[in-house]
Amino acid sequence: MLRALYDAARKTLDPVHYDYVAGGAGEERVVAGNEGAFDRYALLPRVLCGSEVRDTAVDLPGARRAAPVVVAPTAFHRLLHPGGERATARAAAAEGAVLVTGTAATTAVADVVAAAREAAADPAVWFQLYLHPRREVTEALVRRAERAGCTALVVTVDSPVFGRHTRDLRNGFTDLPPGYAAENMRGLPGAPPDGLTDIPMSPSLSWRDLGELLHMTSLPVLVKGVLHPADATVAVEHGAAGVIVSNHGGRQSDAVPAAVDCLPAVARAVAGRVPVLLDGGIRRGSDVAVALALGAAAVGVGRPAVWGLAAEGEAGVRAVLRTLCDEYDHTLALCGGRRNTDLARDMVVRKGETW
Ligand SMILES: Cc1cc2nc3c(=O)[nH]c(=O)nc-3n(C[C@H](O)[C@H](O)[C@H](O)COP(=O)(O)O)c2cc1C
Ligand SMILES: CCCCC(=O)C(=O)O
Image 1 (cartoon, rainbow, N blue to C red):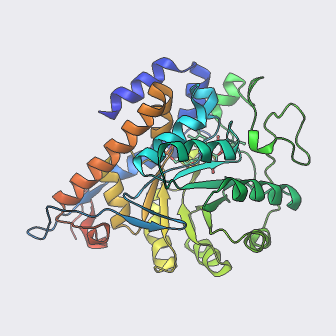
Image 2 (image 1 turned 90 degrees about the vertical axis):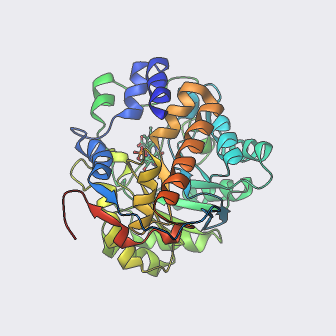
Image 3 (image 1 turned 180 degrees about the horizontal axis):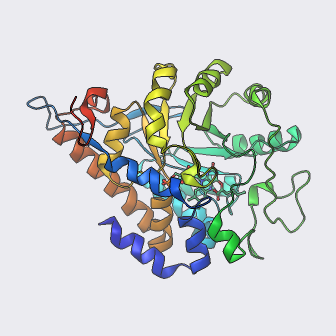
């Protein structure tokens, strides 16, 4: 069903913008690998232990939500649909999902939260942050997110340098066109007056900078872009409120494993101290179930939400979220589960392998 929406997005979008969303780094092996990895897993149901009434609710930092699906941070929504981030925010709020807006949004975070509040009484909006080499810029962004009413921060740590997006380089798409701006950067120290994207990435950022961020704010901070279990441990030891296993949708390194293949080791390292989230390649409800069985508390969706937005604005994002959550609930029922935690590690097998 979502296929039709994705096809509609492809037809609607300027091909250069389509490529920006669909594409990734290098030969896009990781883009393909994230989705392909789910094809190698199968779910092993339990029987005669289900329930008519299922509870898919999840406790996440700063938010208890009815379903374990989060809208991952993606840049430039106004470029992809006139409704922009406001439409995405209304859709996520109406469906009861966390929306992660962020540094590269083309709508200011205060306006994103206001739109979410129009759609639901108790929305949850998190703010994704690229740590700025200048501490005062990071701090200004944090204050904007706090003042807007965000309930958590997400700090992306997989981007010491920009990824080399092959299609964008070919298409010459390296910045926002005139008329669009990374609105959260507007007026900050070092930002250009025309507000074009100026989101520097720095390979000299360190755990020390994460420590400073944690001291800067009382909001819970999730660390996004962890693949190595040792980094998950360090993040938790520093005080992270959550760890997001992610390879940035294959847009940074083209030599990393599929995100879901990194999940079990990270979940083992974190050992339940904080929630572990997973994004990358989630396309159907059964993918959500596999991720939860492998140790995720919730999953993020990047491209699916963007395709929904591009195709049909707010209604399209709602359709994507509703479909994924409905498919997930159905999968849970088929697995004999009543709640998310019933999806145990021993219910996932590699296809073709005996256990
Ligand atoms: C168009 C696009 C823009 C993105 N922008 C950001 C961003 O600004 N910050 C960030 O942390 N991740 C960004 N991501 C990565 C997503 O948060 C997420 O990790 C990824 O999309 C998950 O993979 P999926 O698209 O297969 O769901 C972006 C991804 C896409 C596709
Ligand atoms: C500075 C914009 C970053 C957007 C991003 O993270 C992506 O396109 O993957």
